Image (cartoon, rainbow, N blue to C red; front, side):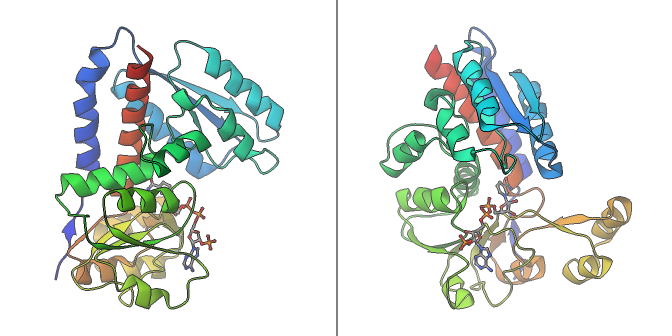
Length: 301
Ligand code: NDP
């Protein structure tokens, strides 16, 4: 079997194109503020992608860079200011925050109406109880990717590996809302391969390069790989991407290449459909952030 590619880049572009007329219908451009603290290379590149997408869509975006040494009261003061500014519709606090900062307090301080990441406890409560509100971007993007590829969820066996507040848990709740039978796995799950092999829909949100392999994938399963990990050894690149000249060239150029949580050879051989890394879930996350920001602005008018 050769898995169908679930192309997140084109789905993300389609979502952003569909938002254009909604942006034009508003009396002023929606405003997105991003708080970025410290110098985490991953966060820098995620934020760059978000600001670029906002600009292309005609949103007003503002990047607030804060030093790594900042304190919890510093972050809270910036959030309070953004909560009050009328031209700002969405506030995103890029995680992780430096370790001395109370991240939970920061997320709680964001006005729930401007919480475009959907991480405020009130919005997580709305998700649990099926009330309207912004949904966390990565899980919402995954559901959109399934929908656009006409992959049925209702009545199917779904396994989510990872239970973080930003991906695994909300994704499991959205799958449940869509009437899947959902199992959540984590680092203490015994017999992980056996549990994963039950999945008609398998989701990996772990952060461990190629942790899931042919032992974990039921033949014909749909595999969605959220993980973003760097391979920095040439032998690993040759092992996981045999004969892939583009990957090797990228590795030669940058000294690294990205891989998900699923061994791409196993996904290609066993799955009926699978997301690539990069170009799978990532672009959907950015597109859903744009959708949440536009929706937040619409609600305020
Ligand atoms: P976290 O580190 O918060 O959570 C990882 C989860 O994986 C935990 O629940 C952990 O279990 C579980 N886990 C770790 N090791 C194992 C193991 N050996 N077996 C089974 N489960 C395990 O990560 P995030 O949820 O924030 O992110 C997951 C991945 O997704 C990362 O690679 C991240 O970079 C990527 N990501 C990608 C996005 C995108 O847009 N493409 C957006 C957000 C994240 P336990 O709870 O027991 O510790």
